[in-house]
Length: 236
Image (cartoon, rainbow, N blue to C red):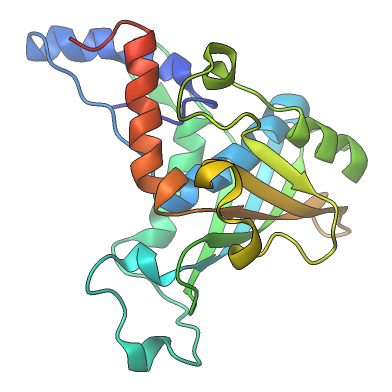
């Protein structure tokens, strides 16, 4: 089953032929984890341009990500909870490798880099923020990394799909951005905001990313997936 981000891995739709052979006609395409959508979109240009060896990420995840009825007010107010159930850390460590991997005709071959994740629930209504640290196969400058991120485009932009952001990644220059309240609704909530791209002495690069978890990470992602399937004549 493809974990689809249309800008990142539309080639994984090749797996639908194998699904159809097994099911006799039907197929399933699904969204990744809501944090993974933003993380994988931020990692994809770096992986393509420079190769990823290791990734560490700490997430600051909004209350809306817990669904309804959500997090109890006494747990959320004036607090940070350093745990999210349902295997959240495991998803964040596994799904980007699958998304940035390849389909070999029989199954999905994960990308070879390693990921370590730590997740936190924070008192923000919408918008998951991530502090990302990467070690690269080919070292680069922060300026070249920021350029690769800013220039990233995918099939939804080429096809001008209705829900697709004009720029899937916005690289922000201000030293205190991205912020959920200021940046989560960029391009209708469908763009990922990246900031503070800088070189790191322990890893090679570090950066901050923000994704609107209920739009780009959930409902909007499903709509964009459907638009891509329609554009490829894969819907009945």
